[in-house]
Amino acid sequence: MKILLLADEPDVRLWDHLDRSLLEDIELVISCGDLPAEYLSFITCFTNAPILYVHGNHDVRYEKKPPEGCICIEDAVYNFNGLRVLGLGGSMRYKPGPHQYTDREMARRIRKLRFKLFRSKGFDVLVAHAPMRGIGDAEDLAHRGFETFRELIDKYQPAYFIHGHVHKSYDFRFRREQKYGNTTVVNAWTSYIIDLEAPERPQKKRFR
Image (cartoon, rainbow, N blue to C red):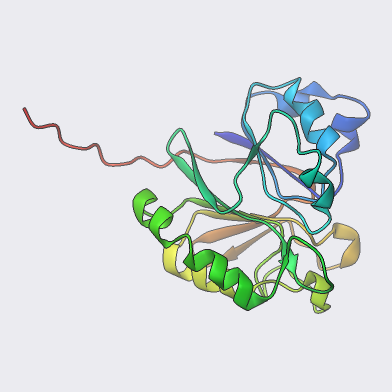
């Protein structure tokens, strides 16, 4: 399953030049936030793949004009052909405003998802705007990661944790992919493609 990841800055190859080769064989598109709603809506015109998104800390404009034709997965587990995708947008709170949380507030959001996570038997991909603390984040408060994401990943061990928020230009140590235990951590800045197999689920027995 080829998945196109987007975050933070529109890819000029899509937005300015419409390079359709970037969308070839893409089955799912995931936005990690801080992208113009018009950009995501534009992409829906050139792919049949669902476009999932969470909010970045700058996505206040989505309240009045959300991306048309796209699916918000905030505080939800979205099942796509057996792939369970959990969405938790927003950044660390560094000033008054929406889509910003303290670590305690983010932990409270996660606790409210317990029943959904129980019903879905966990998740395969965590989609967030901010990184986890200590893996791909920065030291300034605005770009610091959430410690509670580490606890969430330790418990459920998803295949992927995908985030944005930290741009390549921010840090010479920028890394596109990192490993944390059994989880591949990906910074989706601008655009990136991953290829994974939807996990096989045991078939329920049918009783006659």
